[in-house]
Image 1 (cartoon, rainbow, N blue to C red):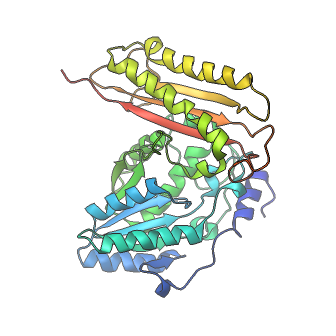
Image 2 (image 1 turned 45 degrees about the vertical axis):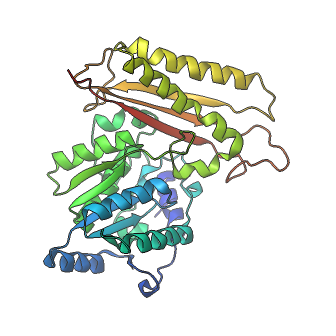
Length: 361
């Protein structure tokens, strides 16, 4: 058991989750297994209460908290899942490096619950923090493309954009979300707009499998300078964080072209490509102790329903403008420099998107 490459990642993750803590210490119940959570869900259902589920992989930030606030405003009870899902990490992706911040996460949830309970909204009732064995109770799933396991696949959506570079990613996302939806039975589930392809995949899954839940999308939360909030931002450090704004700047330039009346792909993406090319050229002219290098994976202009690339935007439909860049590890660091978690040695993939809304007649 656990001998294949993909399964080794799964095995290593078994020992990286916090031990179950007595729920009496919290303002919410913490569940590690399914049956007791389902009993609570039945009790809430019989009491005519509603549940909103916010799935997370922990390392919570303001984007997650905004989704919880939205869920609390629309439901009497909020369930938050915290689970670093091994099946959405490929064989060559480092599952072990994903940030795990249980104590900080719980502290943020407790503080938020104090806020929610002081108002007229719902509040956080349960945290589902399962072990991988709970979520994958039989055959340990493989991270290999053709590996064995019980999976949910949503194609061709999952093969595009992020899926082209990370071929098992959306298979893992769809699979774990199907499990979470089945476990919790929430009236509504909440996802952030930043992971726009994920929202399209989840909506398609809910529709195609007749799942009895409503998918709610919250806006992308950003830093003051525009950087989209992400759990992986802790790896950037000051130097890479500053240069990482190139993706947002590129997307904003394309958005401006659309808002000025441009509809052709070349007219919209041209300014984006100019920005990424110029910034990379500037960085490459610097010394190793000063520069940041990155690779543009894609900048996409796609149909909002199918994610097919479009040559001309239909103004009645609009489009999804999205992109991904990979920030390379720092070549040379300086004494006392803020290099982020991992001392600048961890490559960081940044994704972002803007919705080009339909032009009303």
